[in-house]
View 1 (spheres, rainbow, N blue to C red):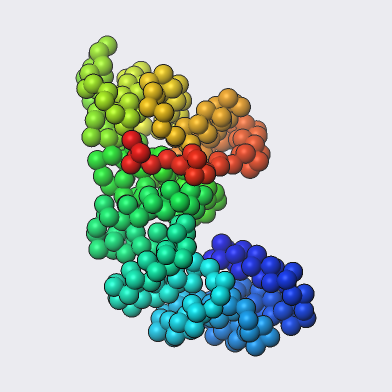
View 2 (cartoon, rainbow, N blue to C red):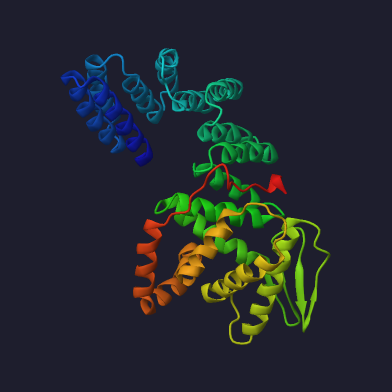
Length: 364
C-alpha cells in the first residue's frame, strides 16, 4: 500500500500543477486523508472522503479508482467493478485500472474475464509489468507454472525495474530443478525492493536455496543448483562438459563451493553465513574466468562493483541474513562499522535495471 500511496500523490501533484485551483487542492487533501485511513482499515470513512474529493474534482479519475480500491479491500468486488466500468472509459488512465479490474474478476472466480481484462490492458500498456504479473498469477493459481513463468519473464523484459515479477519468477525456480535462476531473480528483487517484508522473505529463501542444494558426506560434497551437478571427491572434480551458460554457472559454483565446504567441514558441520560468503566470493572470481557467453547478468556485475569498493562481505551477509539470524547478529556485533559503511554506500548506489541489461534464462 505504500507504493500505492506514493503513486497516488505523484499523480495528484501533476493535476495540481496543471490546474492550480482551490477545488483540486481541497480534493487532494481529502484524498490524502482517505488513503491513510484506508490503510488503517477504516474503509467506509475512506470512501466518504473520496466521494467528497470526487465532487470537488470530477474530472480526476483517481478518486473513483481509489473508491474501487476501497471496495476491493472490503471484499465488495462487484461494487468495485461497477465503478471501474466507468473509470476505464476515461482518457489518460493508467494500467493500474485494468490491473484492479482484472483482480476483481479473479477474486470473484471469473478467470476468463480476468484474463480478457489483463490482455486488453496489455494492448494499451504493453510495457506494464503489473499486468504481466497478474496475468502470470492467473496461470500460477491453476498450477500452470511454466506458463506463469513466461508472463513473469516477459514482464521483467519490458519493465525491468518492477520488482514483483522477479519475486514470482524466483519462487517458481526455487521449486524447480534449476534454482540457480531463482537465486539470480531473488537477489535482483531484494535490490529493487529493499526493506519490505517480502525482502526478508526472499533473503530466507535465498539462504535455503543454497543450504538445501549443498550436500556433504564423509567422501564428497555436491552442489546441485541446476540439473547439472559438480562434485568434489578428494582432490578430483567430476563434472560434465560445459555446453551452456547454466552449466558454466554450476561448474564454477560447484567447484569452488565444494572446495570451500571440504576445507571447513571438519570444524563446521552446518552451512552458515561465513561459509556461504566464501562460496559466493570465490564463485564471483571463478565465474569471471569461465563466463564466455556474453549474456547480461546485472546481479553479477553489481556484485563485482560491490566487491571492488570493499563491501562484498557485508553485502553477502545482508542478502542471506534472514536464513541464519544468529550468524548475522554475531557478525554484526563484530562488524558494526563495516556494515554501517556498506549501508551508507548501498543507499547511494542502487542496482539499476534497464532493458539493456535485463537478465533472462530464455536468452541463453
